[in-house]
Amino acid sequence: MNNENDTPSYDFDGMDRKPSYPCDAVEGAEEKSAYPCDLPEEKASYPCDDIGAAEGARPYPCDTADKQPEKPKGKGRRGGNAALSRVIHSGVFERTGKKQPEAKRPAYDRTKERRGADRGFKSKSPESIYGRAYTVRIEDTSDVGAFVKAPDEVLFSELGSKVQNSGEVLLPFSEQIGRPKTGEMVTVHFYDDKGGRLACTMRTPYLKEGEVGILKVAQVTRIGAFLDNGVPKQVLLPFKEQIKTPSEGDEVLVWLYTDKSGRQAASMRVYGHLSKNSPYKEDDRVKGFVYEINPKLGIFVAVDNKYYGLVPLNETFKEYSYGDELEARVAKVREDGKLDLLVRDKLYKTVNEDADVILYELKRNNGFLPYGDRADAEFIEETYAMSKNQFKRALGHLYKNHIVDIDRKNDTVRLILSE
Image (cartoon, rainbow, N blue to C red; front, side, top):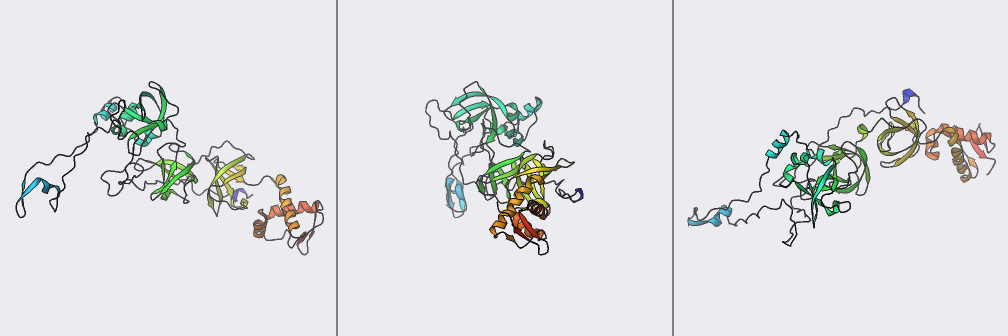
């Protein structure tokens, strides 16, 4: 173990990263696309769309606007206007009818926000609402799910335009735990469905805003990877926030944040967001997630997926990859709370294990090794996955117990007692 002056430093402290969302709007779309960057040509389906007039059927409340009349098609530069005109002579047209006005969706009444401000409600961003749990009342049930009363905090926020006039939000059957009845109180999280409409779920997200944890990759797209957070609304992991290219089904350690556009996103750059307040002390056994490998410092480990941990460079005797689970012993708790870790146990626990490794190599080479404790340290690490000091201690243990004989002049080792 290095002394205090040689202790590797964490050279990432104080990093201030402000990631941006890579795809705020789809180019060419008439309106800003719904999260997460749905393509304009895709039409999201909704469980209650196209419900007939069967008795008891309840259509989704926001689908009440009349269908827009088809525009008559014309030819040439005049386009649709030609169908409403007759030719007097070349290049001169006379109007024969009036163009029908386009059907417009009723505008959201912004006075609701003003009334909310008068009652003490501040307009909150969607992400601050999506990340919270709300206790609401089941107002009604139908053949597509249940309807809950949206709280005032939602009605008077930016999401208010997505809530019907009655203030009710759909809780689909697929997002229910059990089958709540009218009048029951349930805890829900709000989210945007595939059609961009506000819905809610009784499921709880695995991670919330500002937390660090492991999420599974649900899909990889042209704008990044989408992560399963336990609720219908998946979280985007942008390419610029990836330190390793993930594949579908991989588990990644991420930090959740809100990007500049107000949407929830994830970053694999978790170093600046781990905690220094671990409950562990020296010699405790811990487990962690390998999230970074620095050839100058060592292996960075997120102990319990949330505390700082580092296996120093001189203690790494095997290759690790991103995502490996590592078991280690706490060698030291630094003044700032970060943990120095050792993969191996204390000397008196490991010397016998190291001696067994040397014995195995002796037996594999007919009881003879053409090198002793003067062998190159790099060769020892590559051959035995231990430091040169560990090799010398284990070899001395075998010699003291009359199991091997060491030729100091030729620096060779011979097995004299077989087990």
